[in-house]
Image 1 (cartoon, rainbow, N blue to C red):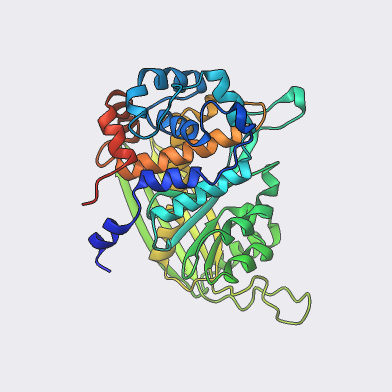
Image 2 (cartoon, rainbow, N blue to C red; image 1 turned 45 degrees about the vertical axis):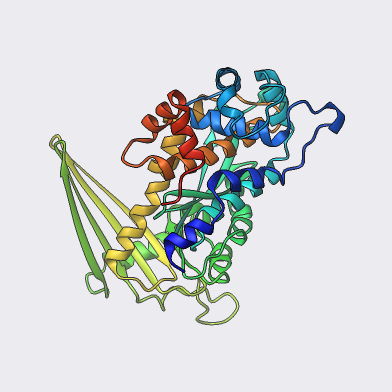
Length: 384
């Protein structure tokens, strides 16, 4: 189908958003509902896009933009106060809310992503010591090329990330994609979960796999090893960084021998890689080396690009959430509020990124807060 025709028949971003909100079960007694849940969620998402960081700011923004809000819903009784918003967001089932977000996010891009990064992030001030609850840790799935959040799942502790990764992968189509994950997921079970879904893995190897790490390091130290190399140099601000990516497809020696002689240590393993970064700045030299395993038989340039794209989840998602959306400053600690507001920020960051054009995310949010018409364009873009 012609892309323009396809866009014309695809539901608008706002309509899709409201349809997905409608699937979330309202935890309140029907006779006591003064503010419909879909209108509340719309208010919270719109206020977050418009540069609000907490319930007090969202409530104040909603009161001063009631005319704007009534362009998209009845808001018969106006908008709720901050305490009421807090109570409702604390009671929404986070599992259903996360599923609602995933369905909406995947509908934004009907084509399956080709490069996916998975990583976890902790909201540092979301812990509740009086209740014996640790800080919220959220594992996110990131479409590296599209720079969109596709899914997320909360876990109790960072070491439980591996338990939720297969469930996250089940929520989307992975055919032909390359999935990159940090060293915490470098184990055969995760590798199997990825290859079983017709995708390839690129997993970092660090000290949590000491034997594998040392074996790969010794291999690349051997001058006779069969390798392919790619070098990139970046210069700027008195800093010179030379990145060297070395790939080898000679992996038959990486065996487990647990169940039978010659058993592969990882399913479908086809490449190992070394990524070396040499940085010269202010007369000082630093050198770091990282090692990877992959089921993709890629060359060194593609491997280097995939590794760099994984760092994008830190710079383009986690850093933006902390610095631009103030996630690390949030003190939501009771009920499901911290979890649900983390999902709201993902709604907002996707909507802003799709609409920001050449502006920064920070500037786009500022303008959305000042100009209701611009915010309306973010929520309901016109077909081109």
